[in-house]
Length: 526
Image 1 (cartoon, helix red, strand yellow):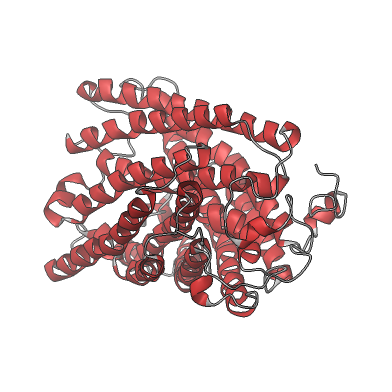
Image 2 (cartoon, rainbow, N blue to C red):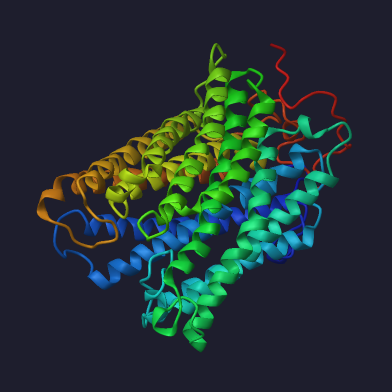
């Protein structure tokens, strides 16, 4: 890819990649893995939307629809969005941004990738058995009683959890121990701070899900009676355990995305970040509050009124540090020398979509509204505006931003903008009608619906084709850039963080000399 020695050509052969200890190569392995599963999960999504284009059973059977819905959710959550930014872009750029030669535990880093791949393959193995139809939440008691292949999927998710824990552990130790001379905590880039906050959640929350999934397997195999009421168990207990992890997991998905957005807005507005420390404190605050909001998923489960009130208030509290970030990003853009290249377009798309997702989250945190909207398409739309509109927009923006550094090649700006336009327009056409469908009472997770819901469902399906087309264009543009794009300079954007101080692509050892840090991460001098 490049004439000079760099991490890509430092060693050759498949074994040099599969046994690599270089954090950059491991990041590329994660990239290939995550994008491959994104393709599979996306195909399941398109199949679901195709079936929902018109009322009645049209293209796929109801049983297969339930399985497609389960695999779409499980693949996108556990194999794409949760590992997406930390494992891919985090692995590649965290050591570079703090001036380190690698992560603290390179072998553990490689092991984390093998855990993800092993767990994902075990989970997908259920496809060739008799599938699984529980939904990605594996709610009991149905997940205990169904004859489908729940155990392989749950076991796969359990193993993938180790990947998340090991990555978080590695990042925390790396940040504490391997920062370059002069890089104090408040000189770290905001992307590093976001990964640090995320790592705390990964280490503390993931074991709860792991234990819950083991208990689910034990219940199916041994009949121990923890969640199944027929055996003296409590299915609501499963929901408490599951959401104690899975709502913090939302912030595992979104906090790194916020870190990327900070980097993009600073680089393409050519201004110092407005309120650096307040954004740092907001990241830590979101991570802390995330452990106390899981009960808003159980407003209709029969929990006490006082518990509902407390969880409602705490959920709304998350909006405070989130609003701080949005305000600071907007203030940074104000009077900036904006350069509307593809990465900034994705960042602006993130702000628009995530704002809608956040505001609708406040609506769902209101108990009276949630009673009506619970388990409707309003929740589906809200979730996708936060996760897809948030995390995937940030992944795409970050990928375009750092692609010259990773591969030493520039992408085609026109096709980058076309991909953004298709994805952004398609996303809104797909999911905004679902807010209306949900408000009108259309329940989620059904393969059929009454005829009055058909026009909005057809519009939603049409939008999904635009999203698919946008990602196809992005894939072609990125592959072309990697293999045929013009050579990139070391710092095409004029950015100020440390990764842009080394060559493109970086050498195996990251820096020829250990960097000496004397200023904050963003020093544009204005």
